[in-house]
Image (cartoon, rainbow, N blue to C red; front, side):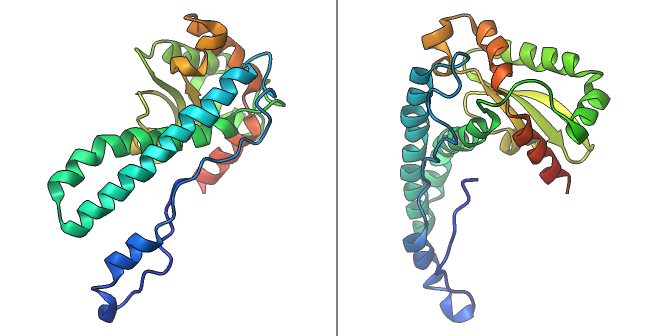
Length: 226
């Protein structure tokens, strides 16, 4: 998600001079993805007010800032201004990560979620963590333990062919910062739960398991194993 199409960029030697400008002109902007369910669909576990603010305000802000940052980055690229390119890296990481992370998060949740995964994913969880209960306990503990803002993740280590749990600070995207392919992300920024659970993050984490979309997580697992 979040890949840019560079349609209309000419290829070949004769087009070397026009290609950079062509790419600049035709770059498509990132857009806020629609939620696959209503804002109130995850109640009582995550209330409608949180979902509305989280999606239409917080995620939208990452998308808008990412577009602005990419525009500045493209200008710096066109000018060969490496100093500006380097100075824009933190904003790209933060806003790009925010967009990537939330685009995964919304699909990881479902009003028909909860319970336990089935099939290959469940077998892999048992193999790599001992049991589903141990996996749940470990991902919950890692997510509770994030200092300040960040995410708890279940990722796939392609090199080792196994599942792995990790925490990322702020909006650092899992794959871009650890190499793990994201399967399930749990947002532990206060804006994800504070209106409902106040400062008691463990209560939010207990509730979120009731809306985890295991079909989506399983589908991501199947895709990254190919």
